[in-house]
Amino acid sequence: MAKGPVKLDDVAREAGVSKTTVSRVLNQRGYLSAATIAKVHRAMEKLNYRPNVIARQLYKQETKLVGLIFPTIDDPFFGQLEAALENELYHHGYKVLMGNSQNDPDKERSFLRQLLNRQVDGLIVGAHNEAIAEYQRTNLPIVSVEQIVSKNVPVVSSDNYNGGLLATQRLLDDGCQHIIHTNYPENIPTPNHERRLAYEELLRAHGRTPITYHISFDDPVAKKCQVIRQIFEEHPEVDGIFADNDTNAGLIMNIAREYQRLIPENLRVVGYDGANATRILLPQLTTIQQPINQMAKMAVKLLRARLAGKRVGSVMLPVKLIDGGTA
Image (tube, rainbow, N blue to C red):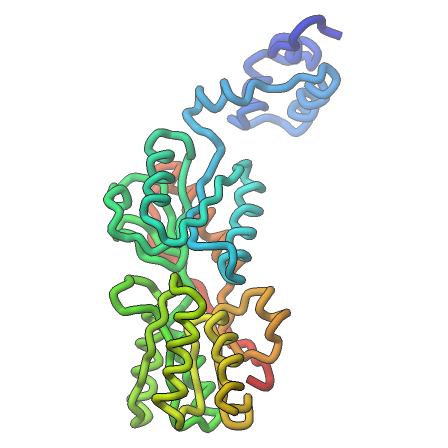
């Protein structure tokens, strides 16, 4: 057993290989046989060798940290997405620095400064602050999920337009005559508006007048409920509602009881997201399910490509309708 701190030379001597070979095993560079790799790892284990991770990271100019900036984990969609991203990044050797911005631009700027100062290797973002100047830089390793932050940042999204068609068509097929939609305010650039466009175009194609009520994701629950009550009070004829997310759909279903509306007898509701937690808590809700875990895998794939200096474009993934049976 070597005395004092175990060095690379000690590992090389124990494994019967060169110091360069040990370095290549540690840094996963070049071709090495499985037998050689195993021999080096056995030597490291025997000598209780611990690589100087900090020195290696400085040499490579990387931290193996990725920042995640999303509005909140207090939401089934974002909670599952962040968990899936953390898991996927872990399997590629990264740890995460998680920031729930509540769409606060100052928090986002703080994370961006960390990236610019090389405290994190890259960012995966899903907040709404597209006006932040740092996002306009063309070469930063940033990927966005379901939000548009800059023309320079690739977006991983679900097929929002087709999701809007599926949701609206389901309500039409169920015989709904007066269908209302909820969505983000129009001044917020987000792929969610594709859901609204699909709803509007399909309703017009059926000779109906589309009506959209705007609910900001960042609004407090009380304000969201106020808008939903406004729907029932201003349109007592409503018999179908396409909610732009499952959280709003749940609020709609709860408030409907205040107006003696029975689901599905005289009101149909279709949501959007289909996160695992929602499917457990609201199994009766028919919803458009986004492929959340696949979106996380794709976001990490694009980020790793950007970290390697490659040019990548935005990616759209398919959605599907999940039949809740009664909603």
